[in-house]
Length: 179
Image 1 (spheres, one colour):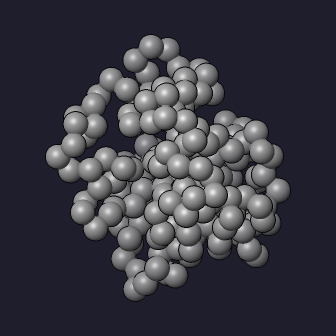
Image 2 (cartoon, one colour; image 1 turned 180 degrees about the vertical axis):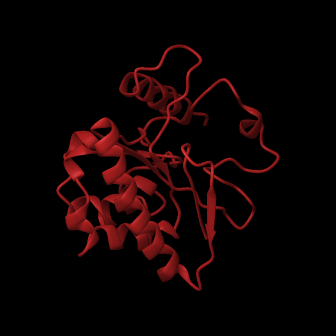
């Protein structure tokens, strides 16, 4: 399922697809379209990627023809909506999976990949990532970043972006990043 909305028209489009390949294809097409529109509008494309196993099909598609050639990677900045505090080579590292499936296969400048410091203790990594977001997006106190595109998934238990039902982090409204 893909949900896309635009501020200009206030319209929402919901697409239902038969399987993960079809969902990933629609998401890859959306990625390319959003990249070009964002770069035309602001000179850059900021996208936040989700972790887990589902987006890995999308990442592999984006690294292959025809999508890889149609994304202006030098103007694309990649962020994460969630990450685990594990080394990059750990199988549960969302950054590690994206690196393997996408980053090593595309010409994106390393400085355009804004990863959460997953090797740091959770509290420190969250603080450091929040500071990096504030610098990149030139945020004032109390402001939150606005991304051009955010990919989110929903876990079997209903969690989104590592925000699990019933946990205190779900109620957080003052911090951009929580552990």
